[in-house]
Image 1 (tube, helix red, strand yellow):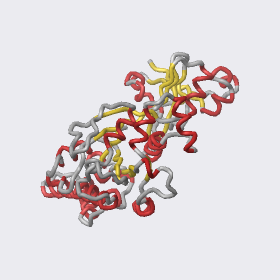
Image 2: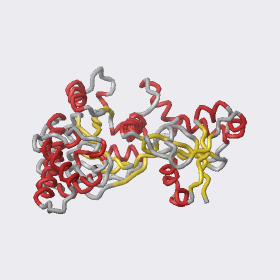
Image 3: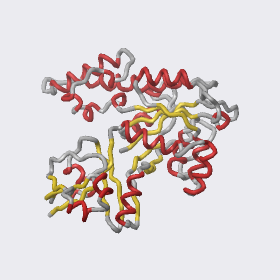
Image 4: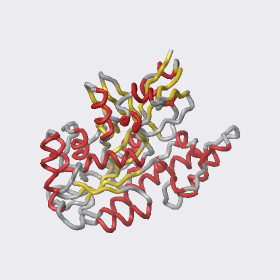
Length: 357
C-alpha cells in the first residue's frame, strides 16, 4: 500500500518524509522542485497487539505492518498543462494508492512560498484543481477515441466520471455502484484515490489553543468528508531520530502518548480500509497488511505466492482467544482454533498459520 506525499513546493513534504522514515534520504531545501525523483520509505503502523502476542510466544523479532510513503515533487498551478514538473508529478501520483496532501500553515519568512503568501485554502484549491483538470483531459481523450468495440460498462463509467469532473469536482463524488467500483483500476483516475490532509504548522504554534487556519481547514475537510491532521513536520523530524525511551520523555511534557507520525500512520491505515493479521512464532511476530473483506487465500498471497498455490487451510485463532489462553496450545484445547478454507473472510487481529502443499 503506497501513500503519495504531495503539495506545493516548500510546504515541508521532504521534511515530513524524513521524519516518517527517521532518515535524511529526502533532500529538504528552500527552493522549488528540490525533490525531483520520488523517495520511497516504509513506515511501521503502531499496534500494541503485536507486542502482546510477541511476549506470549517469546518471539525474537517484531515486524509491524507497514505503509509505504512516496515523497513526490512539488506541484504548481498549471501542472496539468505541464508547468513546473507537472507531467512528472502527475505520473508519480498515478502509481500510489492514496494521496497525502501536505498543506503549509506555518509562517516563516526564510522559507519562500511559490505564491508569495501563506494561504492554505488557496493551496488546496490549486492542487485539487490540477488533479481534476488532469483527469478531465484523460477522460475526454478516452471518450473521443472510443470505438464500436468499446466496453459499454467502461464507457458508461467514463461518462459518469466526466459529468462530475466538468463541474470541477473529484470523480470520487459521483454516485458509483459497487459493480462500477470494480472498474476503478482500469479508469486510473487521480481523483478516485482517497485523499488526506496533513496541515504542517510551526513549532511556535504547538502550544496554541487553535492552530493557524485550523477552523477554516477543518470546515473544508468536513465538507469534503476527508480526514485531516495537524502536526509540525520539523519537530516530528527531530523526534523521529530519538530512542524509544527518549521519545517518551520528550512527549510526556506535551501531554502526548504518541507522536504525530504515529497518528498519521494510523489515520492512513484506518481510512484506507486496511486491517492487520498476524503470524506468530518463536523466530518472529509479524503484522501483515490486508484490505478489509479479504479472504484467507488473499492473506496467504501476502506472505508468498507459494502459500496460495498450495493452499490447504488456515489455522485461525482470534486475537482475544490467543491472549486469553496464552497461545495456540491451550486455545486448541478450548476449541478456539479454527481450520478455515480459501473463502474465509479474515478478521482484524486474526492469528493465522497456513498449511500448504
